[in-house]
Amino acid sequence: FHAQSYNPAYVGLALQKKLILFYRSQWIGIEGAPKTQTLAYSSPTSIKGLGIGFGLLKDQIGPTSEIFFDLDLSYLIRISENSKMAFGLKGSAHLLEVNYSLLTQDLSKGTDPLLLGKADNRWSPNIGMGILFYKTDFYIGLSAPSFLETLYFDRSSLSKSFNKLRIYAMSGFVRELNHHLLLRPSFILKIAVGAPLQLDLAASLIFRNKVSFGISYRLKEALGGLFGYQFSDSFFIGLSYDKSTTNLGQYFFNNGSAEVIFRYN
Image (cartoon, rainbow, N blue to C red; front, side):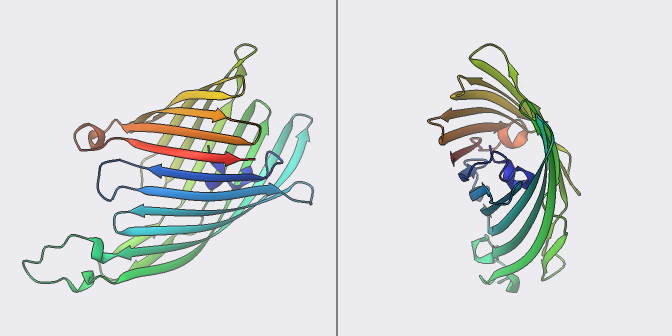
């Protein structure tokens, strides 16, 4: 529902001004589990083919809080009558804060001087890019939203935080099943340095261009459901829920992950 966050080539793609509000709560029921809030805007400009957008994202995971400020630019080239290529550039600033006072400490041997409650704050810049080829019924793209690998702080041998290179590949298509029903399968492949491959598969049915519902599967990780409703030409709401298929979901107190998105064109 929010491809601009990982591929800046999507900015201005629909030749409409677009405002997005997004919230995700992951692993509900586990204290300190990730929560994400996003505000994003994109628009075409008076310069033909040029789109611009910005994003503000906040991630909270346990004692850490991260804020990302993104500025996205895209340029659209028409290849043929029904196909286009978009190139995107993303500039971002990142603030990482760790609040040690939120950690539970074992004080039986005294206070750890590293955990006296002072919050660590670190700013870092980054740059990314993306490319997207699309037609009315098909798209394929590749992106790296952040190229720079940043070491945010190193207070001791046990206190390091890295932002690693991530690469996304995405594709999907639309098929008309009958006059009122469309099928839309898609996938996103995420490659991160030092982490396993992450593959997300999804398939949705769209009825009368109003109601969409479907399923998603993250390989060896989670199974979920998707629902969306287009209230008007301008306003859309999307909901999703997924449940871990790993031990985290089976044996620990975890009520799944949920997200909601509001989009206004």
